[in-house]
Length: 76
Image (tube, rainbow, N blue to C red; front, side, top):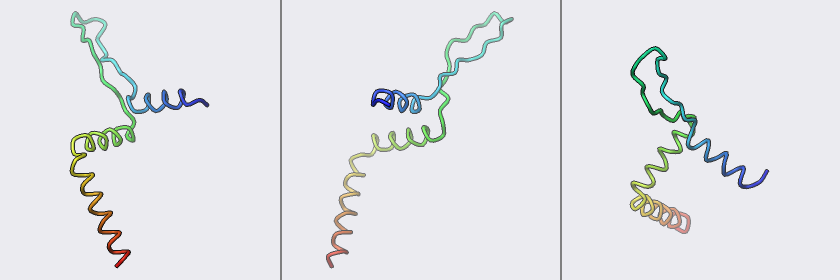
């Protein structure tokens, strides 16, 4: 399996399956559009990515502080 196939599968999993709105065939109103139906793991991944993009400044600082505390506790 090539890397391109793996990237395509990961992108399809992350984006989800597009589901268009169902329209009544006997109605005069036609609704255009739809939504993405995602696997629950893709929704969790999207939430984590959105959190990281919104708060990357303080999460890096927090991780560095915790790493420093861990190193201090091991050396002490």
